[in-house]
Image 1: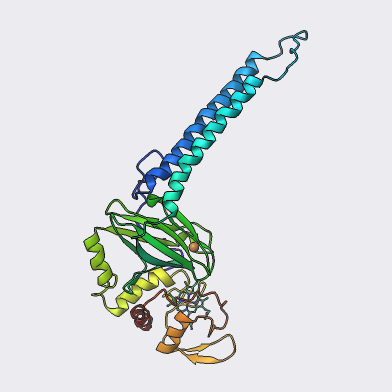
Image 2: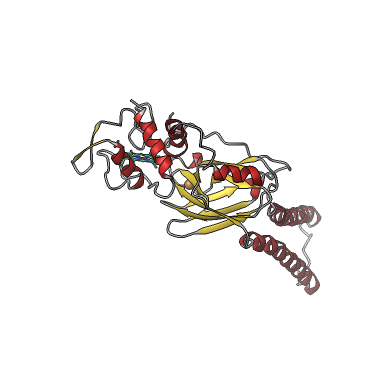
Length: 320
Ligand code: HEC
Ligand SMILES: [Cu+2]
């Protein structure tokens, strides 16, 4: 798998002329604000450009003796074009405020999920310890996301839910939504965060409450697969932007033939690649940096469960 193979994610459904489907309870208010601003802009565009074109013809100077009368101001006209737009922007403010306040404050009983963003993957952590690279949420229940970043500024965006927020290292930002339909959609990173930013996508799965609970309780639906298989899919979603499995060097070393070899480190020492070295490299990547590579790996501490780390190690061992 090369570094730039696009991630396979569900399409964003479009159901009006230009806006994505409204798949959350917030979408209506947000779109109402957008539509109102758009409508006002169109009306004024036509009015201003239309009048300008009309005046061009109407007041064209037709002969040398065609002299413009002295122009004075008109209080009536100036009041009209001040008061009407003032009324309109005040109305737009309240339309926008309603959507904003609704989107800013989560209902108290919201279900909470922790989100960690890193170059270039997403991690979703559930109250029972389940950690997944897909965002699963229940339908018809408010969900609050508590988000942080392990490295640079990322941005969380689900177009069909109309939620977007920056994710900043060293602090928490939150969004909330209530999904209205059982379906699949996609979440994007919308803050340029490096080479594989455009591939920093995740699948969003909205399920009926019961199915969602089953998924969370089963540890993210990964019960039946073997550790190496689980490790393979984790590699694809979390590590592939920087580590190939075919020997090609990209941002980090390839995993091919890694296990059991002697690795030269940046500080001149050598280390045997065993399970402990792999685990340490995943959780504390800056402790032992491989010679000839930048210390550019984000930590996956808190983004992977022990089971997932074991699975990644099992997978790397298969890459002879
Ligand atoms: C943003 C890029 C990036 C991502 C994503 C990334 N790594 Fe790395 N990784 C690196 C770089 C760069 C190095 C070499 C420098 C170092 O040792 O820190 C490295 C080194 C390693 C090493 C040591 C390799 C060796 O040759 O000794 C291991 C093991 C490793 N990464 C595992 C992982 C795993 C597992 C994942 C996914 C869960 C992952 N990395 C995700 C960039 C990344
Ligand atoms: Cu990002």
